[in-house]
Image 1 (cartoon, rainbow, N blue to C red):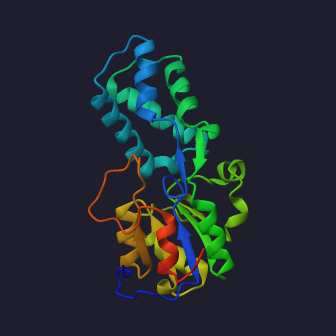
Image 2 (tube, helix red, strand yellow; image 1 turned 60 degrees about the horizontal axis):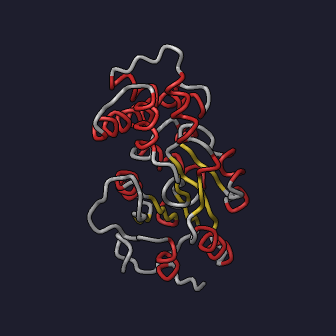
Image 3 (cartoon, helix red, strand yellow; image 1 turned 90 degrees about the vertical axis):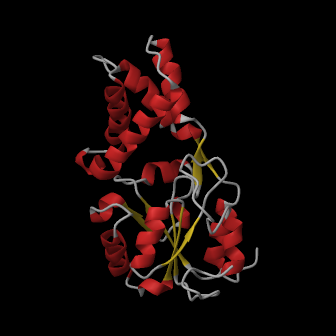
Length: 237
């Protein structure tokens, strides 16, 4: 398989990874958590309605998460947005808090089996490693909990530049900060819009779709696991 730009073995000096559902996964199904707590409080909705409301909440976060002072408040706002869309009255905020505690529990975050091995292999090959996540707030606490911090030379998140990863402005700012030519940077991301924006900015970029990912399945992702990346970079395990 060749890279999108047609170079099967590009010169890569910086390899960027998305975080959620690229390097790590959440073991709690957020919609199931909504269903459980809403049912318990007497609010019965079809699951597809709850799912749509929750997705709308994340769409709001992707555009407005910067308005919140920290990640905890921003993520809670996603749940509150979903409940409001469903017309659920939650004056004490107990339903939202219970759901939020479930889906954002760091103990329910796990690293994909191939993530650490691939990061170590790329580092051993002398390639710089960076994180590029669409979270508006610093993912540092989660990385520390998962013991991933030491693998990254650079950490970028949406709040770093004030743009989401589906905009060319994010990638242009990142390239400037990294001090490298755009075509020397490779991104691996599960968001097709982020991959396309990075490519438009001149980066090498590969899409990944992990089994069980909550994101919509798109046609012909470049990778289904990170181990598939290594031979493309001519790196052996």
